[in-house]
Image (cartoon, rainbow, N blue to C red; front, side, top):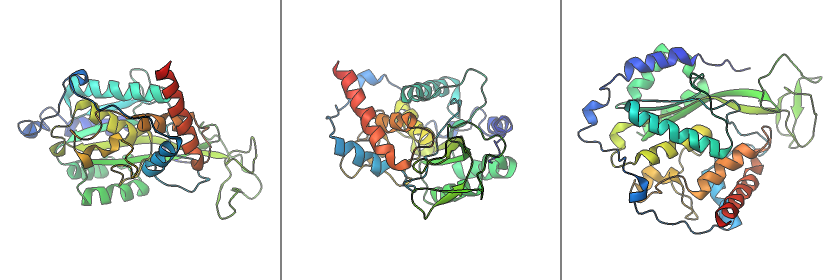
Length: 313
């Protein structure tokens, strides 16, 4: 069972590192736009075919074993934004919470335990190094493997998460409900996992789910020039709530996604979450916690079609 990180202590460290003025050296040269989106010309999205929705999700989704559940939040989202100041940080946090609610994820009440972090900092590599030394509970072996190649390639946003196993309903594991032998073999006999939930044994459903217990997006402020605050918040939303591919920029079939923000540039990338992005998130959080990852495309398509019907009504 994964050990839940003590994020209260982690945020105390962030407060010291991201004190007022931590990014002030860049404020003269880095312009994060904040104008009302209604004043910006937004190119309308054309309707997507069923194949385009499924193919688009397939392009941006990080591939897993088709029978493995997708990591996601099972607890209410409690997001903290650091490095943007109180006013802008509050706007980004509110936008992310609104996106999460639209996707079907509950959000925490004031004072909740933080499980999602958005950080804007001058030199991400320095903050990562300091936090690894002072707050190692914010990292795991798997997360370090995520972070290091991102730092080597100077990505505009460094993303990582911590998680573990939950039972088939997404609830924390209590005790040991193992079946004889301690393993369950999925429909594909090449894969076997620890048996963690024997309430409803099945040959077509895995007996556990995967959780996101902490999700972090750390932006390099030097690479945010001309990025709109809504773009920043929506890009962070997908990275925090879901598991997009690390190398995704724009889908091969030209279906727009906010994940193309840094590849296309702020003026050419979508101004906010696209219909595909929203369908991806809604589909993910509509799935049963232990559903096979291979079913995501179908759930995303259903979410997209429901959204289209609602707009047309």
